[in-house]
Length: 305
Picture 1 (tube, rainbow, N blue to C red):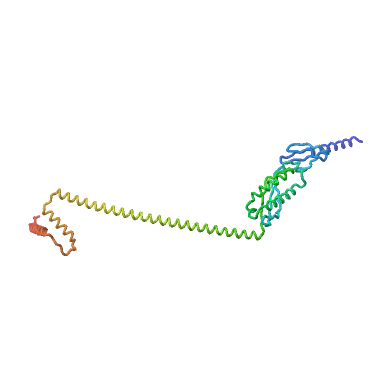
Picture 2: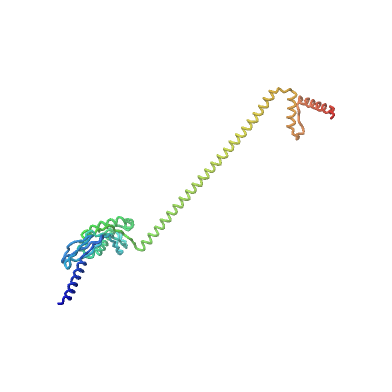
């Protein structure tokens, strides 16, 4: 064999070996697990990191995801305790905890979980009446999760949550429920309206009461102030009269002055409107005296300028 052909063959063999070795080097991601079989039997589970697979002897049997997964199942017909057929669909949240058991424990694990979920749901709903099914979702979810989690342990699966998405009663029952809810809403609306009108009437009455009280207080205060003003005016008049009498007493007026003052008082009382005034006798004499004084003053000669 020529040397060139030998070199080519050796180069090809080296390339094949390098390619095989490279293909046998595997890097496992954080959320994955590799199931390794050696000569057809389970050998190991590779977790995150760098691994080397022996060529032609070992193989990767299955790549398992360690993330939480969601299985959304189709609606299942179930019958309640009071013989009402409903359609219920559920959602199962699960996570693989043992990749080896998940790979070798059961064939088609998701189908097994779906069938197990359907049978468990029928058993639980069969013990409840329609009203309990509609109002006890949390109880149903908790029971299903506990039963499914225990049943899937041999498969390396942990059930974290089970949720009922929809509970669909028959059409006639839905119509009856809608009418009942409508009547309940109308009843609550009537109650709320009546309570609102009652509160409004109470507030109106309280407002009118407060307004009447304020008006009475204002009137009372005005009357008090008016009475106090009159009392102060009367008191001022009395004080002025007392002061006048006091001054007159201090001045010691004669009888003539007193009579003249009395005559002025009668003139002021007449005020030009009275047609007849009765004058006491002592004042009449004073009036004549005053007239004589006026006449004598008018006859006196005027001083020459």
